[in-house]
Each structure stands twice: as C-alpha cells, then as structure tokens.
Length: 285
Image 1 (cartoon, helix red, strand yellow):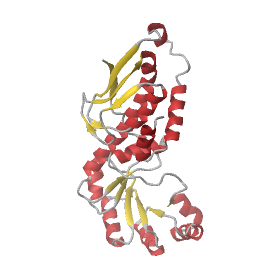
Image 2 (image 1 turned 180 degrees about the vertical axis):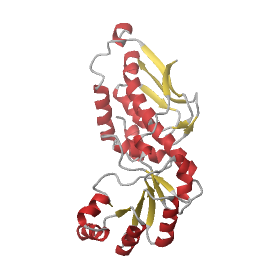
Image 3 (image 1 turned 60 degrees about the vertical axis):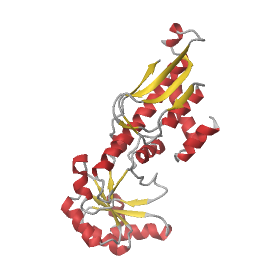
Image 4 (image 1 turned 135 degrees about the horizontal axis):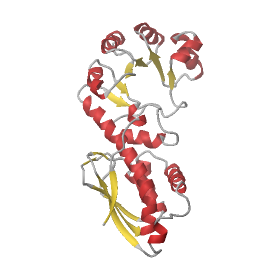
C-alpha cells in the first residue's frame, strides 16, 4: 500500500493494516484462478474502466476500494471524495491495468464500495430528516462481523455520529444488567466503582427509571421504545442534566417527530444492519 493511500485511510480514522487484511481476505474468497477470464483474456491484455454511480446517493469507501486496486497493481484515480453527494451517471473512480486483474478486483471493490455508500446514503436520509432540530443521528453495535470500523466510518461519511465502538470503550446498562444487579442504581454504581472515569449510558424503559438514572448521576440515558409523548416528558424531567437518546421503534417517517421532542440523539441500528447498497457498476471504456 502506498504512503498516500495509507495517509488517506488514517485521515478517515481507519487502520490501513486492518483494511489491507480485510481486502486480502475478500480477494482470497474468489480463489486462485478466475476460470471465466483466464481462458478469454491473454495475460498481456489490458483494460480501462469507470466505476459509475447508477443512482443518486452519498459515496463512501473510495480509499477502501483503492486498497483493492493497489494490492492487484491496478492504476486508479478517484474522481470523488467520501461523503460527497453523487448522481446517477457520475464517475466515481477510473481504473486501468491488466484485464484479468481488473476483473478480479471488480466484485471485491464493488462489494465494499456499494455497501459503504449505501450506509452513507441511508445515514444522510436520516440526518436530512432531523435537520434543524438539534438532534443527531447515531449508530449502534448492530454491525457485520469484521466490518464494524468500516460501517461506522460510512455512518460518519453520511453525517451521522458513532456510538461506542465495542464493549471496551463505553458502558451501556441494559435491561439484563438491571435485572441481574437489582436496580438501575446498583448497576450504575457497580460500574462506577471499577471504572470511575468511563462513559456510562443507562437504558431506561420507563420514566421512573429515567428519574432514577438522573438521581444516581448518569450523564447519558437511552430512552428505549418510548412514545414521543414519553420522550418529551423525559426531556422535561431531565432538564439538561443528562444527554438523552431515542432508541427502538424508530423509522425514517417518525424520525423528525422523535427529534423534536428535544432528545439529543436518535439511535438507528438500521443504518448498518439494513441499509440497501448504492447501485454502482464498472463499465469498460
């Protein structure tokens, strides 16, 4: 991987070695021989092509696709940057190199590019829906194994913000924790006793739990499957003493109604677990 591409990945908050490892794994899934291309194209055949958007959206994953091309020694040039809005027919990347290599790279590059762009596009829809309310759109840990860093990066490209990256960097007290500990208060205090400086969020199903979480000192509260009226009441009761995040039962149609209750965040698992790919294709030139 060239220093330039490494730098672009680092600027995106991605680990270049982790991206390279992922790309190598993806390429290996196709096996050692392309039994379609090798009989048709001689080793010295060359091709050039454009990766073109076939629908409007937001692009993400351009430098990740670049890692595919570099590993297969294919010349490539980005025509857009991650986070850019793109329109159907717009060229995102150009490539040139041995035909066999270009065809080997095609599907892996598209799998990554279309998936990440789909997440960025879906995130932008949610961000646009709550624009002007003060609420921000946040992702969850509902990600595909091995792709979390990339999927959360795509959320950022779409204008969203990331929740915790894993179980290690922030605590989230959920219903099972509360049931095991006996109460919101005891669960929160147990974590604080071991990790006094850690970010701790408490999931609340009822307004009484919200009151309890605030009383014990929680700085972040997840309002789980509450109605808009309940969330508005939670905002009133908390009165700025903790950040509030709406979660569960949200849809794009309902996003603005939830946001105008005064919550700080909308937790949207669908950004990563249900986003449709953005249609992008490779056309030889």
